[in-house]
Length: 142
Image (cartoon, rainbow, N blue to C red):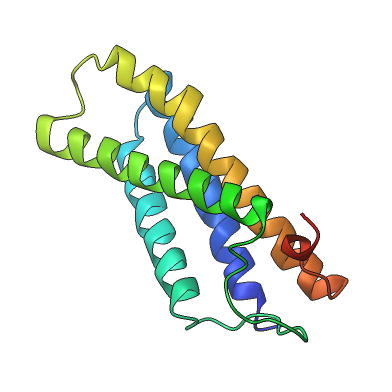
């Protein structure tokens, strides 16, 4: 059950990104603290998973990154785009101030960054849950 830490962190990050992105898009306060929490959790999750510091479900066979899988590449590219995009949005808001109009940034982060990041995260969550429950890696099939 120790592998649940990855799933809990991913779900918490998803919650904070959705909450912050929606609030920023709708010009509702507060949003910056939620966005900061999401960015910190996202970076922590990525680093912990990359360096294998959090427990994971071990299956027989290859234990390396499945670079041959289109689904894995989609997960990595979309989650990375979203993560670095939200880091950029967060830095812009902290450096320039959160009270500017930012009409294009509000729309871009809500309609592009959030769905891209969510797609990558849902793929990773599906893989983690299926590894834990059914003992299969979806990256081996797609």
